[in-house]
Image (cartoon, rainbow, N blue to C red; front, side):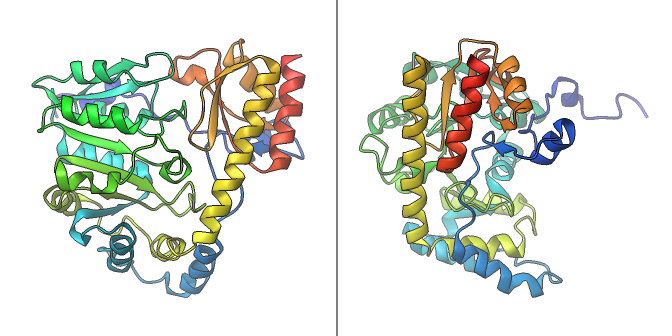
Length: 365
């Protein structure tokens, strides 16, 4: 055999660092109470309708799932008022992002993304031999002009997380319109709307993004059931795009990549409008608690349209992260994105928010 045993891109590949599991912290520190506010999970439990559907489906898990996700696709098409052939169902948002890179990127091509943003955009590009081009924020906003200006003949995909992860801010309706007008038609625009339901009620958040692929076919809108519907553990996400792009993506995705429980849970969750409204209201209250706390402490933060807040502690984030962890609180340190004094704090129940404030007070003291 000549050459390396491994794909050459692995030499430059930096694996994703996941939020530390509760079990690992319990083993390490021997704590009785641990609260994980690191991974933007829904702390209020899964949609009751989704839970009921999964219980009913348990007796069928000896059979493979429907690879076409026929029932879920039909339910989503009706819910979103889009054509079924414009949908792609995947193993959570992360699985779909890897699928996008595998389907479209060639070695030597480029992707554009803001910095900081979700690491999987760059990771999946590097793995395919493509180059990430990162554009810093302008204050607490996306630099739309800079994103447009970085596009060239090598650009294949432009990613815009809206709301952005880890900062929680958004691109407004006007900014998204300007971005679409400014980039070439042959650049695939990926609007990652994993936190869409938390942001959709705000007046400046773009409306009807699900209809964008009808006007601009090289557009992909990504959403997930993990966040608002509380079923992150079974993994279900979806893409809305043009039938041409959807056909190619469906052709190469894993045949059984969306398991039976995920399919029935996602379909049932779509009907749970009461649960969705409750979670949005609970989240608003938690965001307000965090921002009021940060105001009292005199800490800088980004206004959040999602279920987390990005805050500047004024101290080394790795140290703050480790000290909080010793006290039973898991958050996401900003040094992972190169923002050394920032933390991402996920929202939770009133009890969890009070626990965060108590432990944060002890660390900042």
